[in-house]
Image (cartoon, rainbow over all chains, first blue to last red; front, side):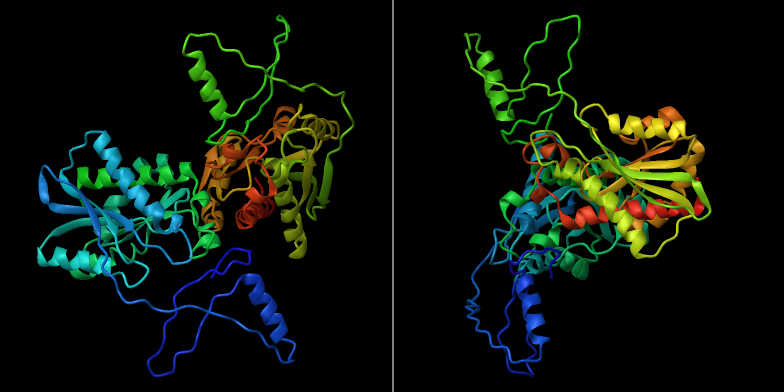
Length: 262
Length: 262
């Protein structure tokens, strides 16, 4: 899937039904796909050769990386903000999810630079293994549940480092109404909307395990599938100013949640 | 002026006060400017050499290019939509204002492809000479005034071909309230706001001469001054999908103005 018009393969996962024999699957470039469709439409035999090296490697150990600002008033209540450390294998993963990682660290840097002492404990989480099973997110939620932690909100940035547009919330109506009342306070930084919707792959287990309200940062989506899981998801495709503005919006939201609660 | 961190000169005009002798002025890259500022801060003599070839050429004839869809109900009432044909001398001008020109033509193409018969006459104007005196816009308004034309609204796209964000209106409160009521009809295409503000250099004379309400299309502005009046304002810096979405929003607005009047 891609919005691009280039001929670079925009890749994704392959899932097999255990009832059937596995057959090889490859992603081809869009122009190649068009060419192939046109050739096949001619009803004359088409012969192509493809060489693919795709294979699974055995699992290796990975780690979530977690920074914490201890809460002064509610140290046992957590606000989680994060992105994921791993990337798809064919690219740098600068947008997916280098952007989310960078923004998570930037929110931490900003709060520390301001000397901000949060009321709640804020966790800055660089999740492992989002692309290949989300086991970092699963593990984080499992540990939280085992410790009986109370999680106020979890925010994820995993939709690219583009210009800010919105935050989406997977929460109760009461929580959503409360955050919606803050929109005039966020809008000057670029997010013009709070919507209903998902949160993020890495934080989804928190909702499943603990019922934690989830929030996904939604930057402008027009360019994301130009580069998503393609070799064009490189450092150069990230605009510094847009990336920073995302962090600004995320920091503002974290601040409001910490200050006014949910 | 630039948001970029590159070392490409981001140029602009130079104006002289006739009371004083003209001195040469040049734009330098941002890193060169930082270097120069640092050197000058050292309070030791700095010697640099610059060669500049800037000069004015004599005026040449230019033309506005105007397409018209004749109104079926109010053929003597005009909706103008446009951008400017010329560009700054150091770049392709793909965003400034190739984007506005392309979108203007795309709105015309769309309305024709739909077989739409407008109630008002819609003029699609590719203005001459925006960068160097706006004489195309002046001439258009002068002719409109001489012919005693009634202009309902003039819309300009001259802020880049980026993802749509808003339309800004320079109009009476009554006109603004009316267009604001259409926001839910435009929002699905990407513009999330109607604001108060300017219209565009080429259409400004229409307001001065005839009192015409003005509207400026406002795409996301974060990347515009990365490339504005710099050699990086090239075809490759325009995203096809974002450019098309701008045209979609403009076409929707033209349709609403034509259908419901102002």
